[in-house]
Figure 1 (cartoon, rainbow, N blue to C red):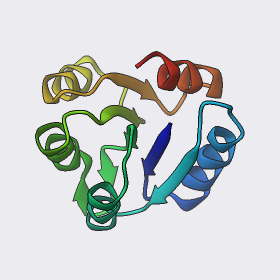
Figure 2: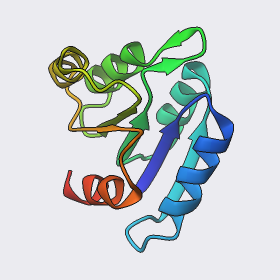
Figure 3: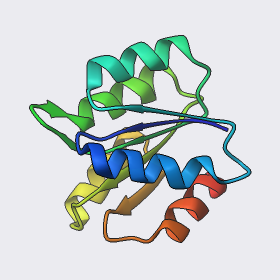
Figure 4: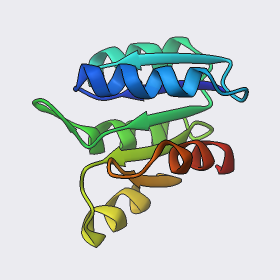
Length: 117
């Protein structure tokens, strides 16, 4: 699987990427810390999964999720966020997100989520 992770916290981004790239299902992992950079990657690479946070500095992860869902419907979206409320879950699911995990989840949950969507 070709996976893109978008998060504005570099240590978190690099840590998650490091864990995922060790998994046998991952053939390529790419990281981005901004929506504009992520859009460039999405348009140039054959991605299977995009993992995105909601809050990205002054940018909004919802906008990127909508963009991917409409423009690249074959790419599966996973929202990995600190938000644990039902309204946020409902909102991302209505956008077309296939997986939702909070940042308090462990890597096993993320890995299972990646493989199950």
